[in-house]
Length: 325
Image (cartoon, rainbow, N blue to C red; front, side):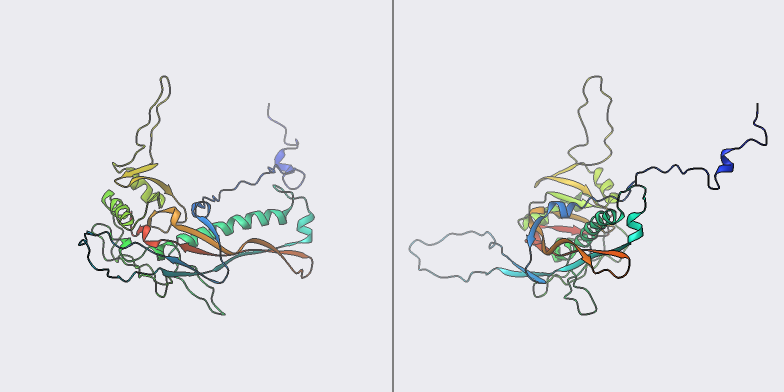
C-alpha cells in the first residue's frame, strides 16, 4: 500500500536534515608513470651549467703495416664537451589555519595532502620536460633556464625520416648545448612502419648504442604491436586454462637484440624514441626539497622545488622519429 501524503519522505530531508553519504576516500585518476625519472641514472650538478665529456673511437679500418717501417705519429681526437642548463621546477601552495583544523573528508591533514600531491605533480612535469622538444636556453632575469630534452639531443642523422615523409631535422649541438629545435615534416602524419623502427635501431647501433627501450605514445604503440617482429604475440596456455588474447606488444626483436616497448603519457604526439637508457642521467643541483615560506596572516605556505638537468652521455646512441601514427 502506498504511503500517505503526510508521511515524511527522504526527499523532505534533503534540505539539511539528511546526513551526507560521502566516502572518506579520494580516488586518484592522474597516473604517474615517470619512466625516465625512474630508469635513468641520478647524478649531481654543481653549477647552473652542467658539463660532461663524450668521446668515440676512430672508425674501424684495415690496419696492415710494413715490417720495420718508421714510426709516424698520428693526431688523436680529443673528447668533446657537452653542456646543459639546470632548470628550476617548482610548486607553490598555501593553506589557511582554519582549513588545517576542520574535519576534512579523505585525508587527515590538508597541508600534508597538498605536499604529497604537489611532489607527484612536480615529477610528472620534469618527465614531460625530459621528453619534450625544449631547446636549451641560458635564461635571463625575466625568462627561465631551460634544460634541453631528449628530442633536442637526438640530432641530425639520429632524427629518422619516416618512409614517404617530408624533410625532418634537428640541429647538432652548438658550443656543446642542444639549442636546436626539432623541425617536423610539413606533410601530414605518416604511418610508422617496421622498416622505420629497424632504421632507428640500426642507426643507434651503428653509433655504438644498445637500444633497450622503444618509448612512444599509445597510438604508435598500437601500430608497433602489429609488427611481425613482436616477441610476445603468442602465449602458452595450460590445460583447462582460459585462453588469453594478446592485444599489445611487450618486446620487439631486431638484428640488434630485444627491445622493450613502453607507452608514455608524456611523449609528444607522433614521437617515437629508441633509447639506450644507460646513456642518460638526471643530475640535480638541488634535489626535491620542501621549504616553509614565511607566513603572511593566518596561513601556512610551502614550496616544493627541484633544480635539475638532463645529461646525454652519448647522444648518438639514441634515435627518434616524429610525425608517426
